[in-house]
Image (cartoon, rainbow, N blue to C red; front, side, top):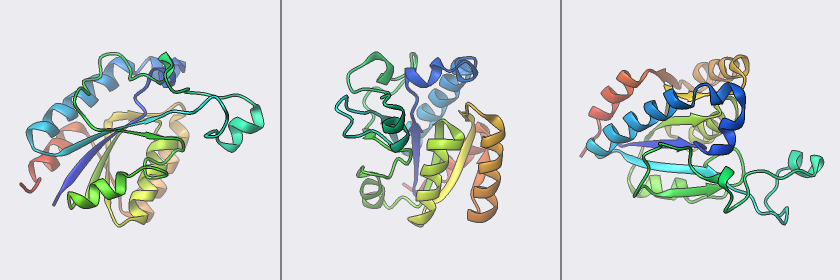
Length: 187
């Protein structure tokens, strides 16, 4: 078994939302614990972030409809959230919810023979869930690091996780169980 940890959208802009802002410290701590343990277990770690261009060329349909951009390249909003220990880790930039859309993530995982991804970050019902669905479409097993994920809408998050877990046989794990999974990493 080869595993990769994906840290998704742990960026300042997302924590401007009050519900995520209240969870920032615990989420950063949980992500940092996973990152540290992944490094020790030789588990690949990828930091995925969303960035858009001001010229609207990367905007989503809803952004275009509202004529309101978000997470512009080079702005403070697009920067990693304070305290996240990601120095030296590979980073990928996406413009859609899925970490697979328009990135070379799948190619990177295939080169390392990764068959399982552990997802952490925000938001569970959007970017984390879409990444999970696309991972499944690419025959990758998925585990959600529940201590290291959060959403702006807990009801949506629970509903989408239930569907993904039931339909795609994905699993939700607390950090202790994720660490046990890392220990199974083949070297």
